[in-house]
Image 1 (tube, helix red, strand yellow):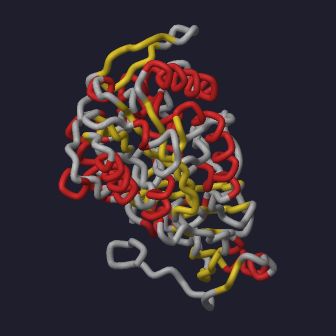
Image 2 (tube, helix red, strand yellow):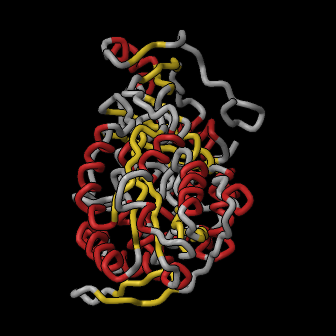
Length: 422
């Protein structure tokens, strides 16, 4: 028996129960019609003249219905005689290569065939200005040559800083349209100054580029579209401040304030830029953001196929598994840290041979006197928090919560022959 197995063999894993957490489930049932109606507003599609080329900026995040929203936007542009094409708008994602970024869009369902428009992917940028602090402002060269630019993105809290503008249209413009060099420039001085630099760069780009409008989306706690707004360029900053507060109020969360062990089945770039959303886990890659539960030890078990080996975020956890490490594309993962200047999330967490020993290791190190009392929570990922698993030690607390429904009797985790959760 290995030394690690001998250290962990007597550590108990608590019995579990499945629960349902209830959040505001407000949703736009017909999101296609809703966006089509938004395009009837003045100062949006009506600004496009027949024959004009229009760059439609689409990002890498797992935005609900992103293929539908992209197609509706392209169809609306065509309806007034515009000539749309799609530009990947994702900073350094996709391995910071043109092919990788086009591939990210493909996996989101944003293909040339489905959208009815070409995808023009390149990492080439031009510098259009400089901030007073010396940071250069870059933009995708292909997009800059279009007659018009429109941007589609979800508005939500950022994972590494706080400010009136966090993650949304303004960040998409400053960092997404800036490609790898723009993302690198915006992160150069660190997240301490991102709340200033993101809107400053975006405002310059809105002023100097033919950006017409943004398609802003807000999602509910179940990762479903609950608000759609097409915002003329001049109003993007003011409206995004309001939409961010709306998004924060709808953020999904774990309804327990203190957790000894948090088990996360999957991380991935299609889930969060950080692999897992720190707003949910309470574990942030920088000291400039806050919120979420107090978690003693955290485990990530695997990485999504869609992430293509980019395991950014694994370093934020305490433990991981050998199967995740085996899937790790170090170049793609480390490119994230080198671009954002935050390298702790790209480190490899303490690695155990399988789920069984990773969970035992977390229980052993979670700083409680009686391991049988471990307050353990297991989630699929940070996007799906409706149904989760909790240890029986949280059961009484769960029964008293008005937004929690108990779904099962207590049971033991089941592991397969390789020691991984079934």
